[in-house]
Amino acid sequence: MHKKENMDITETKTVNYEEMAAQAELEAESDKVASAGREVPDNEEDATDEKEGNRLLVNFFKEYEFDNGVEKQKIKSIDLSGLLDLTTVDGERFDRILAKLGHRPLNKFTDITYCKHVAMHVTNLPAEFFNMLNIRDMLEIVGAVHGYFLFG
Image 1 (tube, rainbow, N blue to C red):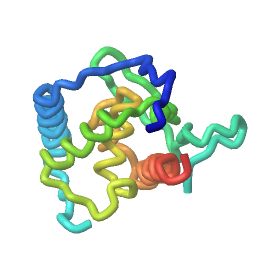
Image 2: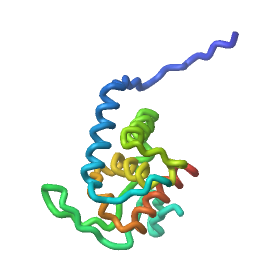
Image 3: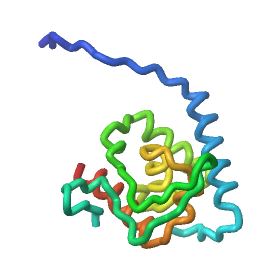
């Protein structure tokens, strides 16, 4: 038998799956509240910043004014570079959120709801912000998330 040496794990993260399920349920419920009144049917290019070459910086076609409860912010772009720090636990969390929503897309990486929750997580912006976006801007986010998972 070949024994591998130097197999130390530098970081160990314990996962409380009950807490993750509770968080997923809370996020799914907050999405239902934030999305109340919207009709969502049951069936179901990667954004680049040419000046800096950051394909995870999504520039919107228009500027949005968003009240975060403390102040009004003007948002013209969002940085999705937090995608680089996602873990397997984060992926499980997103899957649990979709399950709690009763949403089962054919391809989650091109699904608006899945990509919205990924973007919410990596930008710390709430569902209300993403729900107010023009569809063209949301599809830019979907393209960036899809491009990241497809091409890395």
